[in-house]
Image (cartoon, rainbow, N blue to C red):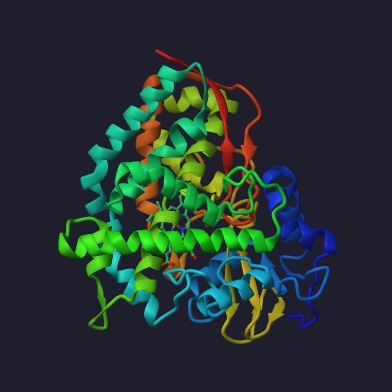
Length: 432
Ligand code: HEM
């Protein structure tokens, strides 16, 4: 029987779900999601004080997250923000850009606009084209692993390998010169890690939402100006990179507006590396904690694709996206009204025991492993083949070179509700 009475989460749960610090305390967060999935699988999250944020429905079951992701007619990305946002942030964005989101991009569009933009770069990100990059990615991975070994035996895996490698790959794709990469990294972290004092580069603990938004808006503006220069250059001298496709693209016979073009660059630049970095670090943490599994995968490389997929599930670097109901609908017995906001919680879905046995364990031989970490449906991750390729090639290089790996200190997780994962991973490595 469907219930029209909202299943309202307790204040304590509501605070946890929207608290960036809770995402750094992973096990406690997973306990909360386990409880919700079992007891309130579609739970309304309301602010303690009215008006701080719009109430939303938190979706924690795998089947529900998949159903909503795949139905892009009933569940829209517009007009509410696609990432959990405080009302003050939405207001700030409206004033700055006239839109609910600071950046217009693929994740903000719905049909009929979305497929037109998505089609522009879809083929470029397919395995057939990415094959051309394999040699370059392998050389990068070998170099990163060698540098790490040279700096060993104690290293921070995030800083030495996981952060720089995917950043470099995505910057190559976007035609950004190597000397600008540190600046681009800082900007991305301000955009995604604005809630984290270390990652935002401000060192400021407990920034107010307004301070975070100002930081983010500044980062967006800098990105826009920077990419306008790249686009002009690629119009004059097109190459076969993604930057050239975007700069020269036409939708309905018209070139992209400056804002849409910048949005496209920004979504690729930002979505493309922190996520992959976090997943690489996640896999390394799991192997450092489990020498037997490390030895097993090192000896049997047929386990490598499984390791990659499990790293993606176990890490779930993108922790949620939001959707808005286009009509009245029912989910797991709960009535949802047209216009309601929903959080697809990929972390909770990827730890649903009805889909994954012993979900908190890292198991490279897990099969099947149909996780939700890349989403599903029309917005499914554009870069999923690129992410898989990079993680596989890096682990080929790591497993070739390293004899053992163990933790050399406590790893720290990012305090972020959106893109999560490790920000430090101290390791002791030994290489033959
Ligand atoms: C392990 C790494 C990654 C994870 C976990 C991840 C996860 C996701 C998720 C969950 C979505 C939203 C799906 C949905 O709404 O249904 C998404 C979208 C997207 N991702 Fe990724 N991603 C990763 C790597 C990458 C890379 C390397 C790129 C590089 C191009 C990329 C580019 C994008 C873009 C452009 C979108 C928006 C697609 C659209 O709305 O049509 N991602 N990703």
